[in-house]
Figure 1 (cartoon, rainbow, N blue to C red):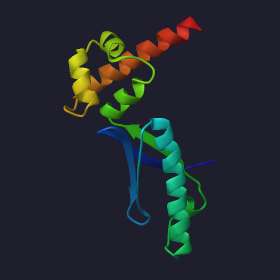
Figure 2: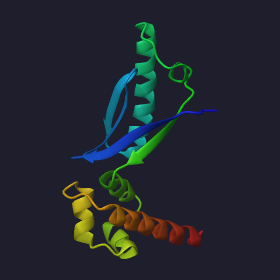
Figure 3: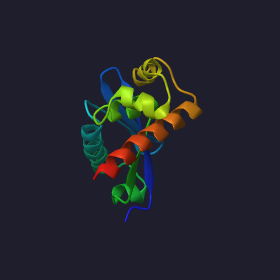
Figure 4: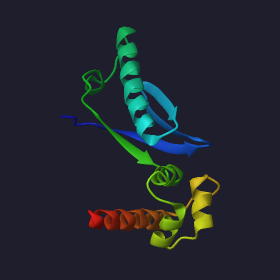
Length: 138
């Protein structure tokens, strides 16, 4: 069981998801992909490959990395969150559920503007409303 969580920051950059993880000792791993699912898959493979390369080169790494005793914790910025949500719902639905203007949501999704923490919380709450309504149908 993994007892270390590695924080992986995910953002939306242009037309791709991008994620990065950095450690003072182990270095940095950066990956891009068209979908969040593919990004997670590619990142896990890239990190494993990076660690194997470091070990082969004789670099000293924390034992939990060498043993694979870690869990990846993906933290999506608002743009990435909205872009991923678009695969399941529409901006119009998110707007209705969150009470945030659709044009404003579009600015957030495109990275034109960054929402305040309160706005981000409203977006997440709106996505929870949409999800719970869909679950109620099952």
